[in-house]
Length: 179
Image (cartoon, rainbow, N blue to C red):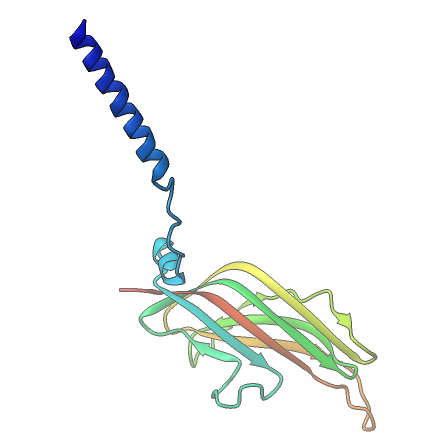
C-alpha cells in the first residue's frame, strides 16, 4: 500500500507541476507581421508589377510615350487589377477607354481590352469625372506593347472649343519569367 501512495503522490505532483508550467507560459506568441515580399513568395508571384498610363495630357513628360509600355522580352505580364480615372472639360465626352495589346512595329490589328468607366458624374457645368477599378486577368506575351487608347467626342465652336478628355490608368499584376 505504501508503494501505491508514493506512486500516486508522485503522479499528482507531476500533474500539478505540468499545469502550473502551462499556466505560467504564454499561450501563444503573436506571429511576426507579414511582409509584402513574403506574401508574394507564398502566392508564387515572381515580380510584382505596377505601371501608370496617361492619355490626353502631358502628365508624365519624362516618358517617351506615357500611354505605351513594352513587356520585357524575357517575361510575360499578367495584369490582375486595373484602376483609374478620366476627366473632361468643355463639351467633350468619353466614348471609350481601352488597353490595346499589339506586337511592336506591327501592322496587325491590336487586341482591345475595354475599360468601363462609369457612371460619369458632373462636378460643375461642362466638366465630368469618372473613376473605375476592375479585377481582371489579362496575359501579355513577351515583347508585346500595351497602349492606353481613348476615344472622345464633343462639338464646339471657335469661341468655345469642344474640350478634351484626360485619363490616368494604373495597371497592377506580375511579371513571370519565360524560358
